[in-house]
Amino acid sequence: MRFDLVCQTQAGLHAVYDPAAVPPLDRPARGEDPVEAEATKGNLIAYSSGSSGPAHFRVFVDEPVDPGLEKRADGTTRGVLRVPTGHLVASGAEAHDIPAGTYEVTAFDVEWRGEDLAASSAAAMQASRTGFSIDRILGPFSGALVVLTVVGALLLVGDWVIGDATLRTTWTRLATYGSWLGIVWLVVIALWFVPAVRRADEARTRAQADYPDAVIHLRRLPDGEDVSARTGVTFGVGFTEG
Image 1 (tube, rainbow, N blue to C red):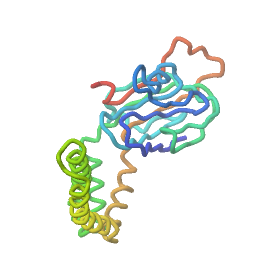
Image 2: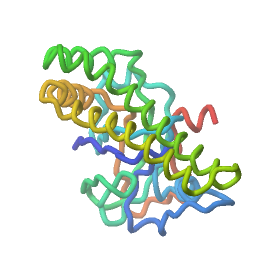
Image 3: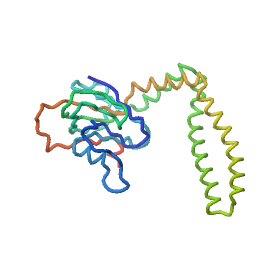
Image 4: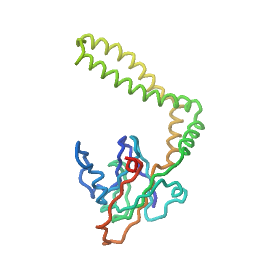
C-alpha cells in the first residue's frame, strides 16, 4: 500500500499519527514540545522542514520504497510508531486508514536538487505561457503586499498609541492609506482568478504531486513484539540543523 499525506498547515513542525495514540497536541508557551515528546515515545512521527509551509509525505506500508526515491534520500531515521486504530492523520487534517498495529518506521527527506521546481515550472508554462509569466510576478508581489499591509497598520496604530497623532488624524490616514491599498488588493485578487493564471497554477500543483518532500516507510511488526526499548521518529532538516 502506498499513498500521499499532505500537511496543509504553515507551521514548521508537522506530525503524522493515530489520534487515539496521543493526547491533545496543544503547544505550550514554555517547556517541552508535546509533539517531540510523543515522537520520542513512538506515538507519532515528527517532521520539520526547517521553514514554514506545507509538507508532502509519500507513505509506503508493508511494501518497498521506490528505488528512485531511496537514491535521493537525504539522511535516514528509524524508529517505531503505534497506530492503535489504523487511522493515520497528517497534522490533524489529511488522513488515511491502514491496518492497526505497531510499525517499524524508516523515514527520510527527499533531495530533488531543483528538479521538482523545474518540472513544476515547465508544467505551468506548458499550461499557459501568459499565466506562467503573470504568476511569476504575482507570487512575490502578493507576499510583499502582505508585509506592506501589516507594517502600515502597525505604524498607524503605533503613531496613535505612542505618538502625537489624534484619533481623527489616524482615521484620516487610515482612510487614505486603506483606500489605495484596497484598490491594489482588488487588482491582485482579480489577477489570481484570471483563467490563464489559474491554469498555470493548477498545472504547477499537479506536477508537484510527483515530488514528495519526505518518505515514510512503515513495516507492521508482529502483534505483541516488545518495542519498549525503542524510540519513535523525529526527522527532517529542521531537526538535524536545529
